[in-house]
Length: 264
Image 1 (cartoon, one colour):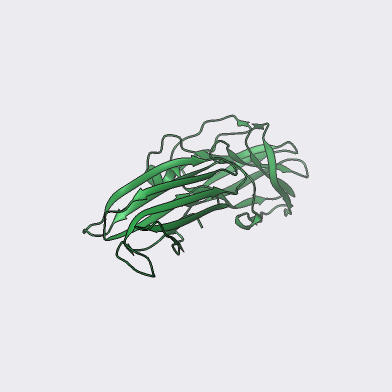
Image 2 (tube, one colour; image 1 turned 135 degrees about the vertical axis):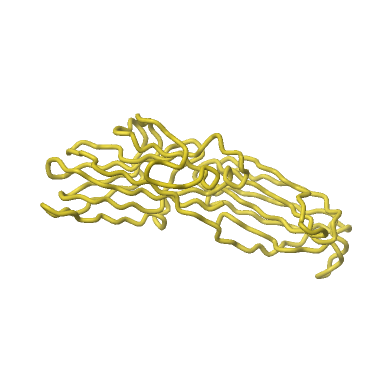
């Protein structure tokens, strides 16, 4: 998961170590693209706790980054948020004799689902870009900047057989806007995403998954697809993610929902 915490640690001698003088954080990116990592160190000697360390940085594909922090507090903890699910983060305590000891990390599930709805979409056998998401480059909340974001699921209501695709990258027409939208009341400070619900075409990019669904003449059939467990390869730091659909039997009017999982 993309949120790790050490919980509260102490700089006093413990577990065969002397007084803790430093903490070393080692980050390895085993993912398919560069990632963003946000590290905070909290001073738990005071109430409310205060920050004594705070860094937001990028880690390229297969890069190893090491950060070292001096410890002057008695009680402290470190947290890490990161944008690529295949990141490896290890934290070490360093005592006054230079002895290193690994710190157990707890994974926390902190997430939201950001979605968009679009209806009365006239499609034919040609590809039609229904809904597209991208990272909001204007967001300033560090946890949101470093959030792991991935396609979660989709629903398409159709009266004919349909084909759907998820396309990473490329260029879409229409306009990306911040939330809230006319159909979805999400405060702009609660999502790291912008959405484009006026798009019709996507040029370039690559298909990262696709499928087909049945339709019922004179009625609607729901094509419901879970995407979270498909381990799709994408780079939402630099790319857009677009839901594309077409009819396999002439023309149709669709309604669709596209959902993105945000963990920050």
